[in-house]
Image 1 (cartoon, rainbow, N blue to C red):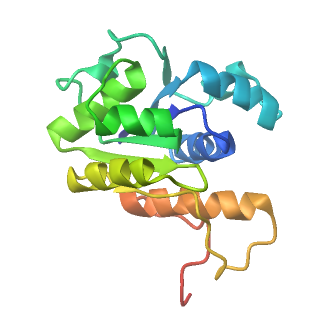
Image 2 (cartoon, rainbow, N blue to C red):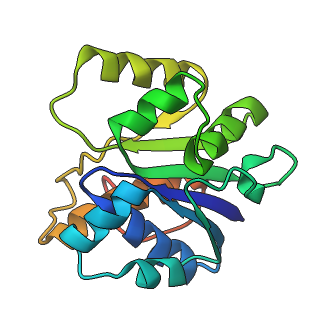
Length: 184
């Protein structure tokens, strides 16, 4: 499996970092793009350095590298996960504005009918945010808001983060035990 992971400038960068850790532990090839704003947020919200996060990925690209292989439909990959997804990135993807490696990789997913998972992290939401999510859903993207459940009785923030990462793994068909499924 080959997965593109994009971390954008929204609070909740730990979701993207944890996703990378888990994909890495499953020996899945990852292609990482971190937006410049997300780099600042990683340093503010976590104890990880940018080089720590880059080291978790098989490959990484600069946000402005429009020549990156992930920006071509002829490069085979299974999915793109934008986690967390800022409303700026959500708007750009929804409106076909592929001006960065992140928005272009998402555009490739949609035009090639590959799996695109958007993990928006914003609250409250404006009508335009909801409309952008609806537009992307109509095009085949999966909108998976960073809204952890509580039926698995989380005891820590890590448990809540793992719930979201586990949901992504479920969408990708990757067996996981990141949270206890309903009724199990």
